[in-house]
Every structure is written in structure tokens, then in C-alpha cells.
Image 1 (cartoon, rainbow, N blue to C red):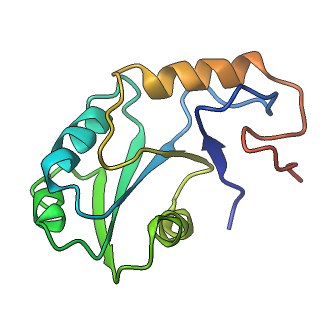
Image 2 (tube, rainbow, N blue to C red):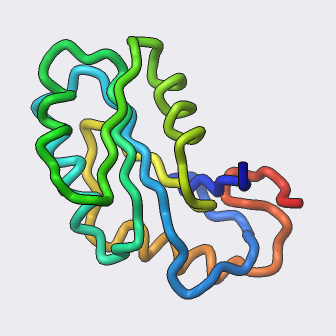
Length: 140
């Protein structure tokens, strides 16, 4: 599996050079957030950075989160379900399914502004030259 670069809210660190518009995988781990998940998904789909895949990992919700998530018929959205194992397990499930070297996490009850991924990508371009990714893991 290729290295995944995690885009987070932590202070920026230096990273390797990236191309003009790399593909991103956005992972939303969910558990019982039916009233919020629609807004979270819409905020990802509204990104100015359109080359992305969205993985919604339902962690055994019982409040309709899975059904709301499945209402989005965008080819970039994949909804996966697992038995309730906790948010860390859901994030790891998403990482195993990620199809790109750049990964971003969004909680199921949060939203992003439309420039979120684009601004993070610009930050990475400014940090060219280091041997570390944004999660601090050295790249081979």
C-alpha cells in the first residue's frame, strides 16, 4: 500500500513535492450522526478541489446515519459499514480502503469550507524539500 499523507489541523510541517492537483481521499468515520452527516458530505462534495474520493465509514450507527449517507449518488462517494468498533477502527478501515497518497479526515458532525483541500495543498507546496509528511512519518 502506498504511503498515505494525512492532512490535519496540526501546524504545517515540511513535505515532499506534489503535482499540480493530486487525488485526495477524504475519510468520514461516523457513528449516530444522522442529523449532521448530510451537511458533512455536502461540504466535501462542494470542495473547489474536485479530484477526490469520499469514504464514509459507518461504525454501526442505529439512528439512520447509514441511510442518510447512502442518499448521495455521486460517483466520488463510497459508503462502507462495519460493526461498532470505535472511531479509530473506522478511520483505520478508511485508510485501508484509501485509493490515493493524500488522505484527509473529517468528523461526521463537522463541515469544511469549500477551499479546505485546496488551501492544504497550497501549504504542502510551500513546504517542498523535507523528508517528512504532514503526519511526521518519514517517506522512503
